[in-house]
Image 1: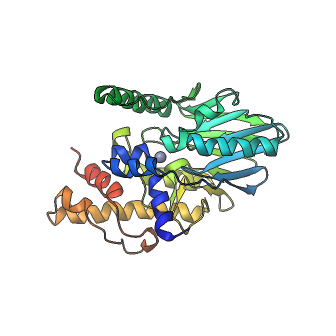
Image 2: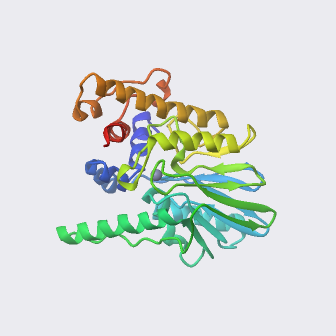
Image 3: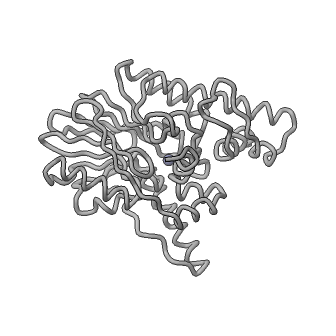
Length: 314
Ligand SMILES: [Zn+2]
């Protein structure tokens, strides 16, 4: 696949988010040109692995006593993921499905698991946000006389701070660390395998989506990455929600530090521009590369805009 195609796919993966950021043309371009999905299952450690297709990275557990999945991407890729899980688990179905946060590229495939997942878990705020975004989209479609958006499925079990459950010899724990990427983010820990699904709290060398309308906070995101980093060791393997085209979705503690330092540098960069008198419009149009973060490539409006808004919020 060409580099530009990969970049396009990486950006398009945000779907509805792109729409809320004033990039509807990108979302439309995607709808008109569905690219074939290559489903890839990659073992990580123990019985835990990750799946990539289209959208946020899915984490999964298959052991002799159960199957768990973290996030569901979109309907088309979720179907491919489910087929692969069923094949590997001899049609066991899914015991536990967990959403890390509400974005459509992480929850859009939930309906595929409707009668297959015994339990659907999410942070209470993420479940609320998912419903709110959907209700807004339904109203907007009705106002414009357009087609109603496809139905969603929201978790039926919610938690505030933590949730934990054993599945065979593995123990899963979800922990709320928010506001950060949204106002309802959680990480999911596979305790025995020592693997942590970070949801979109971790973008590996990719400018992150920062969902301010949903309550995101860059300053708190920086703190959350420190908290998570300190709570886990050097041996922990972290799953990133998204990664740059040349970078893996599985990361180490040092990659959390890179993300933390990137967010700090982003705030510093935007703060400097504000101090020199640049307007919001001028700042979001900047395509500089932040020194030390060349891997991220030129800056994008999706990170600059929210950073400006957070720094200038009263
Ligand atoms: Zn997200």
